[in-house]
Image (tube, rainbow, N blue to C red; front, side, top):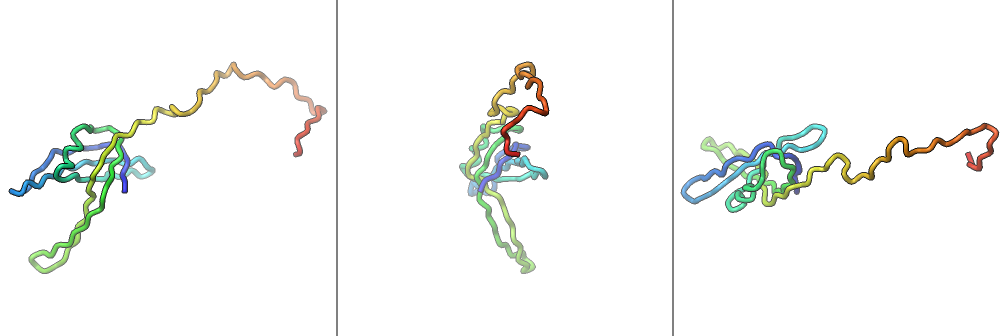
Amino acid sequence: MEVQGRIKMVGETQSFGSNGFRKREIVVTTDEQYPQHIMVEFVQDKTDLLNNYQVGQQVKISINLRGREWVNPQGETKYFNSIQGWRIEALQAEAGGANMPPVPPADAFEPAGDLKEDDSDDLPF
């Protein structure tokens, strides 16, 4: 799965416990009718992938959805989901129709000349 959008925030690397677990979060705002702010976490050695990215960049992030079950001390079962990134790449910002052919200036068009009703045309309609 993939998420595309503009980087809104890149967090610092966080370390947890004595086992050396590391996590780094990034928030991407999608580019759609109702933009979504999607938080994606990168863990362990993948945290370094975010070093070269900054707020405002357009990116595509490859993700995995993760789910966990946890039973609290009262015996209630809770479920948690996370979005974990494993690859990120920069997207080139589209420069306002850069792939479209140039529009000729208005004076490049010639008028059609006089059209008269009695001129016959061979159009079938």
